Image (cartoon, rainbow, N blue to C red; front, side, top):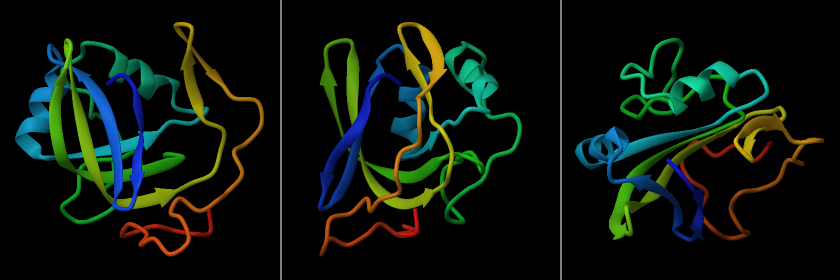
Length: 145
């Protein structure tokens, strides 16, 4: 996946841009659900595996936020489950809009990809609410940060 970002707080929606040539896109169309895991400082090996063309990317420990949910890393800094809300074409990619169903917040320093290199952000992101005041929080949302 390429860019991933938030779209809407009410309802909670996110989007990801996926290459049409990607096996991930086929899986998204078939499953209708996807999980997102924000990687931390200790996840270099996981990031390298998912950046590769390896066909078995889901080896190792995985968890689910709900009994029938898609896999997420159990020690991810942030994890969410989404159902596919809408998919539309955009050049050689498709934009996949997901409805956020469940969220789990963790702690740590995020692993980032910039200028073809994996690295760490200096400092930590302060804990804060994901939903605006008065908006319904997704199932599994933990306000403690």
